[in-house]
Image (cartoon, rainbow, N blue to C red; front, side):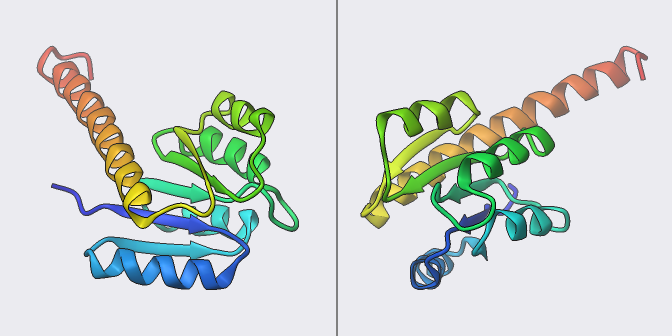
Length: 142
């Protein structure tokens, strides 16, 4: 089974550091970024399954970052994690392809539950794609 890899994108460096350490203690590979632009750069070289994404960040905000992630990396599951939640931003994030929306402060238990759910979803999608490719090869379509 593939090792889970997540990315935390938030302009609060203390939150990134603390959360990264907790995930690493659980054996989860974690990448961090303090901006949407840097997160997109990192995605060019790193295979990530799940992203926790803050909405309010300087420069490229979370919604624009989410749009770019879903356009370029549609299999990555994105969970919005923010302290500035409104019903409108939650609906907008879900329409743009976010899997879920969590409001800070949030417990590590809730975060971990969402990570596991998202990783399972990514794994199911990848298995379906692999099965379809195998069927194409067996049936001589490729």
